[in-house]
Length: 360
Image: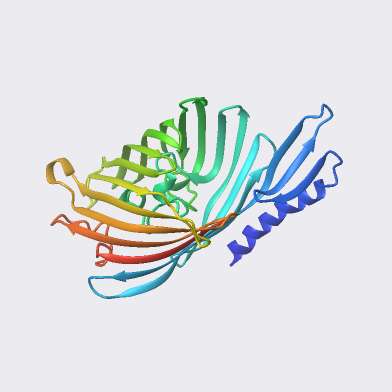
C-alpha cells in the first residue's frame, strides 16, 4: 500500500506543475483522446504540441480450466495503471505499476528518456531490455492468453539500467539499433555488481509491414548461472493478417549445480483479421500458435511442444481497446526433465482459457 500511495503521489507531482503552467500566455492545455495535450505558440507563429500526461490502464482477467485434472480458477492476471508523456520535445517519461500481477503488486516501468538529436535517444531507469518483443511479454500486445515460452522462461523482461537507441534510416525501410547495460538482477532489485548485464539488437523494418531483428544478451546472475542469450525473429503485419516467428537460445557457461546448460525455444504464430459489421464487435480474429522448448535440441529434440488454438472477439470501442478471447492449449511432452522451468505439476497440463482484456 505504501508503494501504491507513493506512485500516485508522483503522478500528482506531474499533474500540478502542468496545471500551474497553464497560466502561461503562450501555452494552453486540453484533455483529448491522447491525454493532456499542451499547445505552445511561439513568437515566430510556430506551434508545438506535446502530450504531457497520458493515463495507462491495462486490465486482464481470465477463467482457466485444466482439462486433465478438472480443476479451474478465476484470476486477475494483470491490472496495470500508469502515466507517460513528454516534459519537453527532448525529454519524456513513463511510470507504470501492476496492482495485481497474478495477485502480486509490482513496480514495472520507471524511466525517463532523453532525445538529444533526431533519431537518437537514451533511456535511464527501469524498463524493457533489448531482447524481447512486446508481443511476447506485454499483456496488451500478445495475441493469446498466455505468453510463448520465450517470453516466460528465459529472462526477466525488465531491468534497471541505461539503454541507447539510434534510428539509422527512418524513411522507406527503417533500420535501428538498440544497446543497453543493466544490473542483471531483474526488476525492483538494485544491487552493486561486478558483472553487469549487457546486450543489444538490430532492427530492420517496422511493426506495420515486414520486420526482422537479431539480438544478444549476456547476464551473470550467480556462480551457477552465467548466461548468453541470442536469437532472431521475423514479423509481418497488414490489415488482413499477422504472422510472427522467433528462435532463442540460452547458453549457461557455468553448467553445474543443477542448472542445465543449453536451452532453446521457438514459436510460430499468426492470426487472420475478419471485419464484422456489428454494433458489438469490430472484428473476429482466429489465431493459431505452435511453440516448443528443450535442452540441447539438436541432439535431443524438444522437451515440450504446445499447440494453441484461439479466437479473439475485438469489441467495437473507439477510445480504447477491449476484447474477449478463447484459447485451448494442448501440450505434447517428452521424457526430458523440464522441472527447472515447469515448477508445478500442472504447469504443462492442457487448458481451456477465457479472457477479457481492456486497454486504455
